Amino acid sequence: MRLLECEAKEIYARYGIPIPKGVRVKAGEKIPDLAGIGPELVLKAQVEVGGRGKAGGILPATPADAARVAEELFRKEIRGVPVREILIEEKLPIRHEYYLSILVDRSTRQPLILFAEAGGVDIEQAAKETPGAVRRVTISPLLSDVPPFALRDLLGGRVKEFGPVVNRLWKVFREKDAMLAEVNPLVTTDRGVFAADAKLIVDDNALGRQGITVNRDLTPREREAESHGFSYVELDGNIGVIGNGAGLTMATLDLIQYYGGAAANFLDVGGGADQERVKHAVRLVAGRPGVSVILVNLLGGITRCDDVARGILDAGVPQTVMVRLAGTNEEEGKKILDGRGYPMFATMDEAVKAAVEAGA
Ligand code: GDP
Ligand code: MN
Image (cartoon, rainbow, N blue to C red; front, top):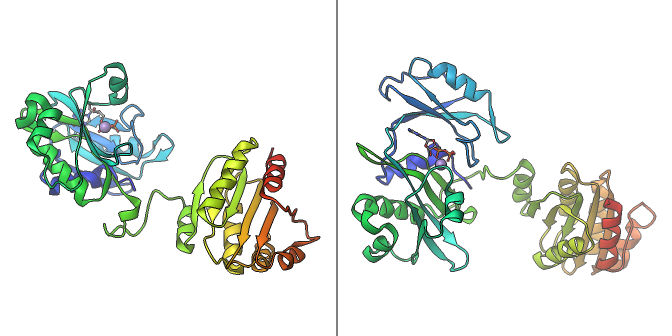
């Protein structure tokens, strides 16, 4: 789950990473006295999207006009996301902007620390245009400190200046179960080094350990699916997919792609799904806007096909539900759905083809 900049900064500060003075203000709240923050301010929209600055999500202000500028910012949508909270910060007298981040590198399956002299808003561009602009160091997740040799590889002659910040960010990364801990820009000023921006993504599998009870990155439908214990993912196509078991569900998606179709979402009901679970599953998948046809591909084992059939009937969704049932109580299941407008198929291949055609 991605934290807001202000949340990430509060964590960074607790780990000794200097952050600018600032206050959080929610929509509708009164702006507090800003005299103690500074003569020049920046107002930053707290939205979980990148490139806010370029999208108009960061506005300069003074304590005198901050209320008016805040109102302007609250009326905006930043890349489609409404602004519900802003961070009012002192405007730092920036000397230079650097880039620092720690992430899980999938290819080495280890944490990777990145540092660039040219930080700010266009780091991806800089990395592409100037090979070597971003320095990288792989580090064992077991180390509690970044070793001096790694700091030298990463920071060159700037170990004294940035070494402590790198080590503190490393501590954040480890203790917060982060997938990404980023500071872009990491800035230098007359008063030292500051994290001018902060991005922290906590591993979804560690939310419980981190005391995060609600995953805000999930859509309401994804959250409902989670509460039922379904694996559920939203995509951009028009075919709703229900399967049991990750293997069968993935194979179904592959076959849809193969026949030129596109799934709108997919749901894995898991093992031993009963009538009630199947009903919830079908309704959940059908409820996503843009789902024009539903494909149920279930293999009866502990799951009984007659239960599945009753669940599909109970759901009573408006879309056509294409069904492929095989395994335990297959005949009973087919009898229940027979003649009621649920096209049934003997093989997965036929079922997928029909769903793709129906959805085209
Ligand atoms: P992002 O666009 O969402 O990455 O937002 P950032 O917080 O990184 O801000 C984008 C850019 O705005 C930075 O690279 C800075 O150039 C500028 N900026 C942000 N905060 C300050 C500040 O306190 N002082 C100054 N001078 N510039 C700032
Ligand atoms: Mn940034």
